[in-house]
Every structure is written in structure tokens, then in C-alpha cells.
Length: 204
Image (tube, rainbow, N blue to C red):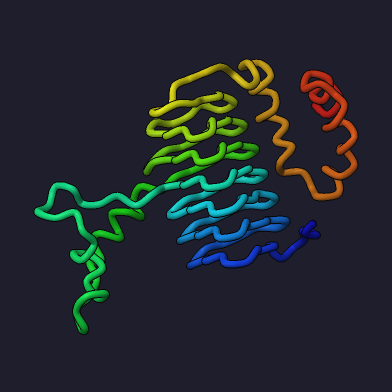
């Protein structure tokens, strides 16, 4: 098992390009990360694909998930990337800067303590709120509220992970911003207390 620390733990065959990884981050085998920020304690399982995205703290990305997949300019005469990755095909030909700027302009934002299920896809421009859960193999095309559970293709609301009173209190507590040792000290309570009891103990 990896010992996580200040330096990201990166498994084999990972590609990371122009991205920032926080503390206690683990990146699973075969994952690809492009121009993204992954905050403290978040991790990916195997073969995740993340582009132009911002992930909060304690985000759980299951295997084979895809965050912000590329879109092709489908209104043109062709879909193929010879148009914008032109340097692959013709020496001296430049790639299309505007196309990549268009892709970057619609980033994905994922809050804290979010779980993205196995094989899920989060489409461009989507925001997923704190504490939300996205079901396995789901396709997320619209924003997901905090602490909602969604599933399906495209996703539909299933239920609340925590109802609004508890969800609001958890967001106000913002335990994900605690110091590392404070989280460690609270570990027994994370394990054994109900959410209500946990809040009652740590709210000030």
C-alpha cells in the first residue's frame, strides 16, 4: 500500500500535463491528467481521464472514469482531428489554437468529498457540488447539487445523500479544510459517529 504524503503518489503509466496535484494525492495506474487541478487528499483509481478540470479535496474518482472528455467540432465538414492536430499529419503545419481554447473554456468543477463512480463520464462545463455521488457508468450533462446522488444516462436525481439541514451544516463545518493532524484526531469519530452526532461534537 502507498504511504501518502506531501508528494503525490503516482502509479505506473500515468501522464500528467500542465497540472497541479495537492498533498496526500494518489493517481492510479494508466491515468491521464491534462491542465487540471487536483486538491489535497483526492485520488483516482486506474485509467481515469481528466482534462481541463478542477477537483476539490477528498474527491474519489473510480476506475475508468472520464472527466471533461474532448468534443469534436461537429458542425464542420469533418469531425476528424486532422483539422486541429494538423502537425501530426503535415510537417510545418500548426495546430489550431482556437479549438483548444474552446475546449479549455468549458471546465469541469468538482467540489469536496465527491464520489465519481466506476466508468462515469462528466461532460464539459458541469459543476458537481460538495458531497455529491455520481453512479457507475453515469453520464453527467448538467450540474449536480451538493449532497445529491445521481445516476443514469443522462443522469437523473436519485436521492439526497444528506437532506438539506445536515448538508448545509456539513458545508458550514467544512471539515475538508481542517489540518492533517486534526483530521487524524477526529478519525475515530468519522468512523463511529452518525453524521448528526459528528456535527454536534464538532460544530462551534
